[in-house]
Image 1 (cartoon, rainbow, N blue to C red):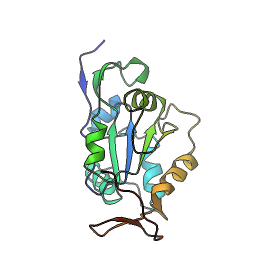
Image 2: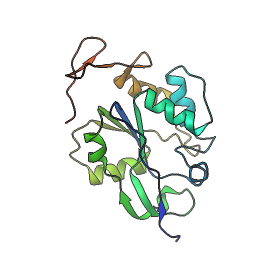
Image 3: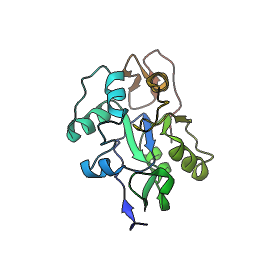
Image 4: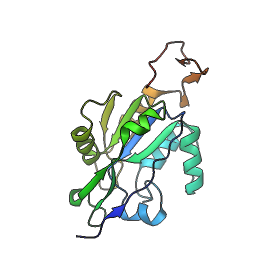
Length: 184
């Protein structure tokens, strides 16, 4: 087994409304030094497509895109021993401080990209105050991937491909006029 490998820092800001948690960066992601770096991974095509924007391959453009759209990215495992890109080989891992990220943002939903991310999340945060959901992995190895599942979940936080929260500094209100609870 390899030495302990470090994952990436989270990408988020105070206005992030959705957290997408993967398991741990793949070899190709570690080579590109950013999330979902394998061009065969369906993640970026799906996310840019949901918001109706042309796909960019540039890391800085992807980072700016998710922040502009209120999407936070992180992996549930922040460091571990791993063989290649195999989630099944993840050992001796450290779990992300999800509560700290939730306290520093407006996250309303957590989408867990794949079974490994989901299992580790549930094991460590079974009483998470924010709704969370297992999503089909966007990995090229997942033959059961369906973009419709992701788009349906994204619509729960974003309406018509745009962030539906209006922040007046006092409360959170959706564009359709309904209020949502704040994460404190």
